[in-house]
Length: 137
Length: 137
Length: 137
Length: 137
Image 1 (tube, rainbow over the protein chains, first blue to last red):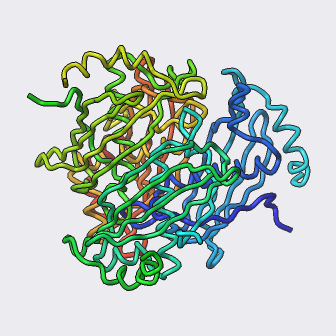
Image 2: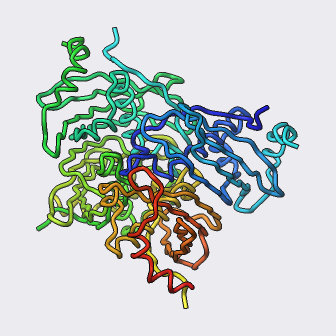
Image 3: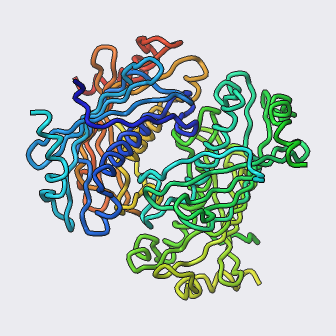
């Protein structure tokens, strides 16, 4: 059984490639962020609405291993699962090239919650993520 | 009958919004470019492959009228039709918000072809676009 | 005497170039925006602070003529002057390549003000821009 | 004595901030990349020229610890030093907010060299970086 709890298919847009002809490495953080937000969307959580309530999930750490570069027009599948580590949520995120299922990037992105400017427990995430955490224990 | 010859549905990604909470206006040029490239893709034309052959379609002019801002999570439909004007191809591109079909941006983007560093007629585009131009005369 | 009231020198960053090896055309909107914001900064106007007060200057139209592409490492000078046209402010913005003073882009960017969600006169801009408008009549 | 061998001052551009009102985390990879390229520029090494010769330095790993978010208009100082680790160069890169010297991000970015599509030793970097490596042994 797959450890992943969410996956999203996307396609590289030409403007995401730089003069080396491959996706500029910074754009993978965009792909990973968009994947997390689409996952949150399935739980009816919106980063924009949270911000309006004074709640801002932010990234505390990101560890990225770049394996295979994507190029213009490539399709890719972005997958994730979550672990809770103290006050942080760790999003384990892997992207695979669709054509041959090769690993493109392996990432762990740790998110913390800022509420009205202070680091805080995020009971909203605790509740929303509970079913997915149990799957991995 | 619609004048549009191609349309593409996309969804706003949160990172495309700036601190005003709406899509940063520069990103619409990205949306429009990606729409053109997806259209070219249906004709088996790839900007990346053309570049490798020394052919670079580039933008000569863009006239943009911003009508309704998109925000995070909005779905939108990006539509286009083409006109030939001398050596230029004019891409007429309109984006509509999916929820209410409101016009988001009306754009005319003029493309010219640089072949080995010089402005040139693009016989590849002439041939590929011919069926779509006839539709509009 | 120069018609320009503000100018800013910048340098192309590699990630702003796409697989054609030149600055992706969407990035010029970023260059132009940053130039306007640096100009506003000299008048002690901050887009971020305005947003917090419910005032959002947004772009209504942009007409862009791309003349000479910039490439990685190029220095460029971004210049502007302003005209008032009814409720709009038109920023006339030209960018020149520093090495040979060649025109890179000629742009007219029209800005309107949204106050608490509605199109409004911007008395702040009226006051701040008054000295610069008089210079051009 | 400082361990850093290069530093660059920059200023946050408004479009680099997202709807949370702070710099989107992906943009720090852009800041770090631009810093490396400006460092290479002092050694007369250009990523664009290397690419034209079939040599592409690419990022293999990045470990990022985000400490203090930057916001629109903030000045920051981006500093780096280098270590060689086998076939990789590890760029140790720290960014500090100028106003109070607070650490913004601590990053280790590992670069490898792709020559004509294959992982390779980069004698160009070996020679160019030698004086800076000796400083740290």
